[in-house]
Length: 273
Image (cartoon, rainbow, N blue to C red):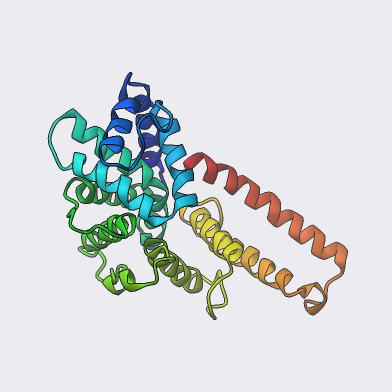
């Protein structure tokens, strides 16, 4: 599995941020839209986007809706400024795009190829976003991206992930796009024997399943080894050393081998992010 598409985007983002005045231009748009007060926030673009993310977590969805709509309005135009606005929104959505790519993987699909479809779909949504949708903007962007990407991929796989517009009716506290991708990942985890298939995974279990799926797709883990690691994690969560009938020493050795194998996978996961 290749990861060039997201590595390339991050490398490109560094170049965009290095352009003199790019951060001040973006901050100016947000000031004009009332998303920021005059002179508020960093002037360097990378710092500005990180600072906005921190404010989103503190102030909530209303703040996110306001600044994203301001940039999406700029992105709907033509020329260099529209491209800059679109690029900022794409970077803000990049974590969601990576998770979406994972959720759309199927046997025989290459990560980079799926990622290219997701990124192209994301750009298309950003450049043509219907500005009358004033609420849950980030969720709308990601769900419409999911809709476009899954529709594109269903040309080759009619059983691909379906987009469910009812997800937009979830409570405001729910990240509906992440819910859609998490549900798909849970289905893959259950199908691949990485979960017991009963109920919703705990956050730590979901993250482990996501990492294992990625490792299998990349060829860093065999499916059997991933299933073993997932099983050990489930057993440990249920204090299963005794249930498995093995000594504490044997259990620690088994867990140490699994941790060492996962560490190598995780190192590449971090590099891909």
